[in-house]
Image (tube, rainbow, N blue to C red; front, side, top):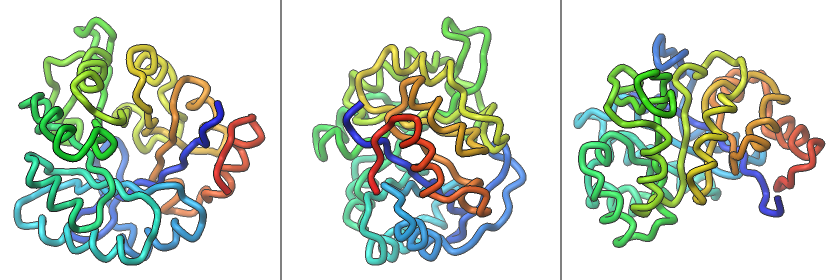
Length: 254
């Protein structure tokens, strides 16, 4: 691998504050998103991801304001997701300062939106977010969920990842609901299964609890690693994760 592995803190934003829970439940306040983003930028994060976990209509202006203030403060790529339902939503987020936009529920309901966004703005701005849960009814054993992991769809996670990439998604963010917030490590078989069917970059999410959890995610096929609570609560720093990746032989940006 010659391209540097990206380390990405994820900030789940609810009503203008960063929150974090376990398996998308029991959310608690972490802090101000702009302040946290600035700290992560100074610590060496390669990118930042903001996810609006409520995505309510009333909260939209708050999220745009957070994006604008963050873009004015932090100069690394910023991905924003949650409640993106149209090309105009993407346009507004990009104008507010986002570099990439993450989509999930809207493209499950209307897959052609992937192509519409990719043709208008380029595939590089589109991150397909998959909230994945075990589902023995699916051929791969994993199913796609929506509404914060609470609602199962009829989509096989691996097949849907391949379809989304074919339709124009520039990256695939794979979040394991089962592993989310557990700090037991990434879902390596899931990452490998997604890697086997897509050539687009894969971002591994869900389960990081120690520095040694990150290199196996890259070995399984991820191009980037995303984590939240271990960074928010000071259990790990960005440099610690990069040191672990470098010691395992993976290139990182210093």
